[in-house]
Length: 113
Length: 114
Image (cartoon, rainbow over all chains, first blue to last red; front, top):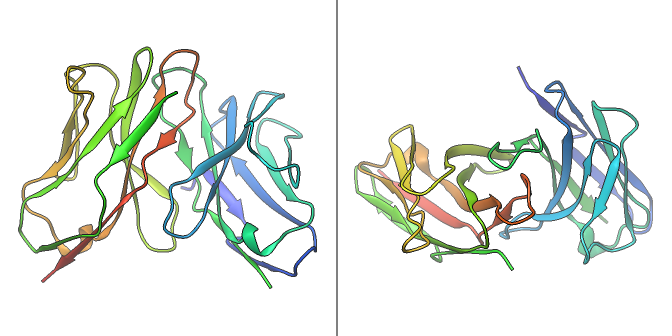
């Protein structure tokens, strides 16, 4: 059974049209992460939540926002997508300890026209 | 800061060949080390992990040993299959002040031919 579920798997949007990607988890993990992975590159951390505590990476553009209304759900909002934001967006969850590994969802692939 | 360096790909092998993908890291503290695999169009799957020096992670015939003295975590498999074709990412987490935040290497694409 899937433990980290991302929706939609594929999203097509127009330049400048806001988009929201969702992530849900059944693991009851404290931490939820959003990574951006552009074609043929390593995933890059955008931000993460430790419970309700939001932590932005220093180089994450303001165009990217996140919400975590409860333990199970986390959303990635892209306010005005540009062509350079086309990527796979990966959600992951973790317990918050130093030794546990994050669990990844299948990813949401965003295309910007 | 913490970083991970992987050998560049693509790595192209014939079925049943021996595989090594090199990975070295720079980190403060005592990070955990991971190998993730990504098949085309899919998310990341944990392949194996090691949480302290001299630990050996293994799964599906793959293995890697956490070598603190050489700051390495090389991935090996004795006999690859066509189904192993994928991109492999080395990653670390933890270390000083961190928790679960993964820092990835650039990834190494493996292509196995019959």
